[in-house]
Image (cartoon, rainbow, N blue to C red; front, side, top):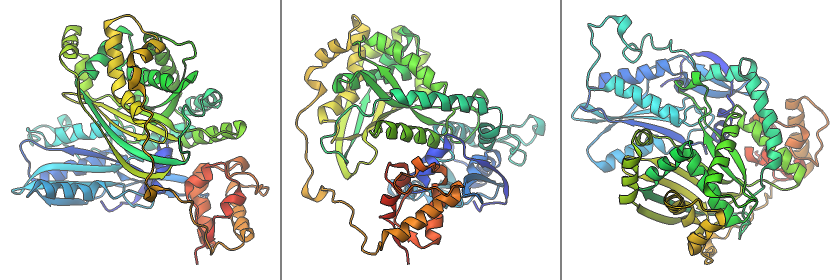
Length: 563
């Protein structure tokens, strides 16, 4: 799509801030929508469906810029003609390679479009449509909305030309589909100066207090600063029915039950009096549920486990805590990061990213929730673990204190957990426990008395850890970054850095011995600071450098002349 004329601007929505930040370094994920029409359809019909998506959803026509004050804004463009890439489906390998050309190149903040369209054709008919969108403007809920629209637009029954226009849906009327109500820019404006301001301000107050109780980290790494990544995949046909049965017993959701089990395992393995899991929340009001955009947010949920609670008590405790956290989701993700940084400076201890749970409420889970207890009990009794696999991947510096990431999805025949672990934090046994432990705990919980965490630990026994750790190979040892011979004296670089910070933040007293955030710097303005440094001929820093507690003098020492 060639970007059309700018039609409006808005600040970044609070949830967008985190993904926009990752766009700056090309680390932002992309979300892929795929649809295979049955039967295959002519290309003009597929193109009309893509045109309709662009007309209806401003998120697909949004890019990011810095305004005159250096503040990032989202820019919505007028609908244009979708730029579609083609693949002739001669082989599975050709289709896989084509898909990679759409999904693998990272989007960046400089891109003039944050969506890519692709169609796979066979015998002059479209057999697959692909829509790849930057996570900065598009989330998992949006993925389902767009796929449903593609199903409607490309489904078996083509639009009836004899139907009166007033009775035809927006999918059938791309020329009029722009009038679809709420858009992400509306949400962002409401957060900044509209009806969502009270909720945002309440959330900011909540998190300023909440971070006071947040554990800095649960585990001491065997090699601080090193991330030896293990990828893991776990599949079970029993976990989903067990989650639904436990959720019914405790009058909560499978998401809460799963998160509580992760808290339980972290408590047992760490021995800490409080646990923290970073959960994904949908981040939408009722009026935003039909809006395509980026609304999801990641927020820490802290739970007291000092009294050795039972599994049932812990589920109830997590239910209350997650509800409280979810009620305060309307907070800017960079604002939250600044709040965390202030608490780090107060304590003198950095927070670790720790363990994150992303539990996807899929249509398959919705179907399971509609089954009765007998069906679910039969499923649980006749099914079990299907796959547990781990593979060692790259070794990189660990600047964020990463422990584990668990992406859990209910599929038609199984629950699938796609995970990453840092083996410098969790040993292989602990990794296995986080993957397979929830099912084992639920089986015991549903079949017998309510066990305490100590009793759960006794039942799991040796499955909770393996003292054998795999060390780094010589070629994996991480050397400190080389000093730049062309860095030159620190004084000119420091003067340029202090000047850029002062001009953008409206102050002259920029203490070089304090970090960027401590002198009042805003993370939203970091790209503008870097741009001013580049204009003055300095390079060598990345956005995340400004979020860490390093003095401006220290940052200046890593600047080097660009020319």
